[in-house]
Amino acid sequence: MAPENQGAASPSTGRLRRTLTQTIHVKPDELRALVWSCIYFFCILSAYYVIRPIRDEMGVAGGVKNLPWLFTGTLLGMVALNPPFAALVTKLPRLRFVSITYRFFMANLLIFFLLLQATTGSQHIWAGRIFYMWTAIFNLFVVSVFWGFMADMFTSSQGGRLFGLIGAGGTLGAILGSSITAISAQRLGTASLLLVSIFLLELAVRSVHQLSKSQGRSQDYSRRATSAESPIGGKILSGLTKVWQSPYLLGICAYMLLYTILSTFLYFEQATIVGQAYVNRAARTALFAKIDLWVNILTLFTQIFLTGRIVKVLGVALTLTVVPTITLIGFTSLGAMPALIVVVIFQVFRRAGSYAVVRPVRELLFTVVPREDKYKSKNFIDTFVYRLGDQIGAWTSGLLVLMGLSVAGIALAALPLSVLWMATGFWLGRKQEARAAETNPAK
Image (cartoon, rainbow, N blue to C red; front, side, top):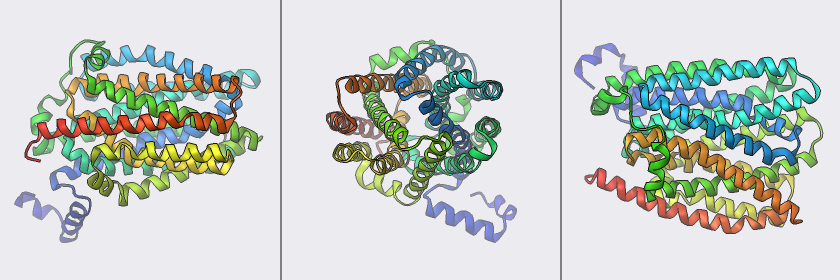
């Protein structure tokens, strides 16, 4: 750092800063942006994980047989929200459209709080179904906007070093959110927890403002900071049209589709097995919260101690095959023994692998595309394509049940898709590595 800053910090503070930068491989002028990115993601995932177990319980309470219809409603919601979001991205500075997006969802949460308080019986079940669909939309939008912001802030080489650590900040937030619901759901009631989520989202908006300021202060980002808050421009539907014109973006779509189809298969297996094992709604909510908690503890451990080493040793291509491999092993095990303990262990390891290893590397795929694609095409893929995979998985799973397949049979039917997902990840990773090498040949 510059000599004039030495007097502003104590020797112990300076030693702490040097220790942090050496331990986590972050440059001094990246530290402020890294910290605010972690806080930002912490707040986002805290807000979501407070309400995720509530969503899962409402899905079971509304009837597992009705889940495919809820997935259809979610997909239609994605179709409806993508054009308005693209219009915001086209016309408004980054800071404005991010803030508006989050506060829109905060207003929705307040409406649901009032609705869940005022309804009982069948009306409450229907309110829960609507909340289930809304939460699925909310999750993808707020997280997609976050990672688009990260891809806009950091280069591919920076992302390789920092995205895992930023993910750890989100994991800590997810642990907090899961813990709040696991501890408070039966005592406070579910509706009251929505207010906690609103508060955390407002903290996220404040963090975005601080993060934008940190970019302007960093010399490494100066070439991008000048235009960072200028409207991105382009056409409202360019996110969709550019996807169809790019084999690389289509590859990301294929990877996402296979991921979500298989995730939905597993989700339905979980819903069926848990529904048979537990009758009490509060007990189901507590179990889902505990699963989330276990997932996030394992994720945090992996992000801190393993993610950087895995990416360094395997590279982008092989890292993108890690979770497909876990999925292949998990569905094989579930096919052999369709029991509660198997589905819980499978969910914990698969989701932890997705969050700790694959998600940060998957976001690197967008650091080598034009800025407009980082928000519009990425949001289209992260929301519509993601939920399209859910839709395909939901109705396919229902069809397999109608054909007479058991939980074990559906698990075995997922094995060929797991192999295809593995191959797609390897191809896509090779393409990203080639693009990154062209952008930064010296590295």
